[in-house]
Length: 82
Image 1 (cartoon, helix red, strand yellow):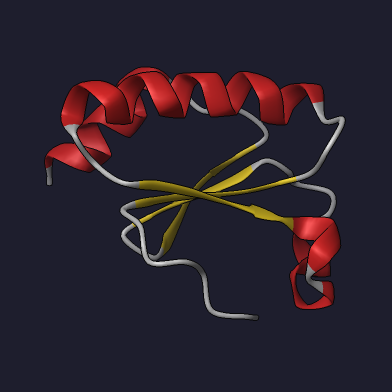
Image 2 (cartoon, one colour):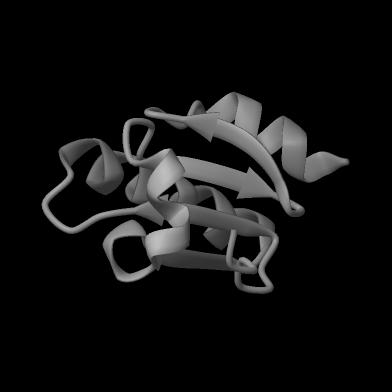
């Protein structure tokens, strides 16, 4: 897998993905309140990310896979508290 961007929260998503749009909103709201960094990667721009194609959006916290398909706000907040 290609290295993920350096950010506390990273989301692998794709253009036109409704679940990605919803996940992005949740993540942006949470990191705006916590002050943590957020980066997004387009799965279709990096062939090495193809293994996640059926799971987008995929979120990572501190470089470890956290969730896929949906982002639970409370679970994300708890992960960012550690």
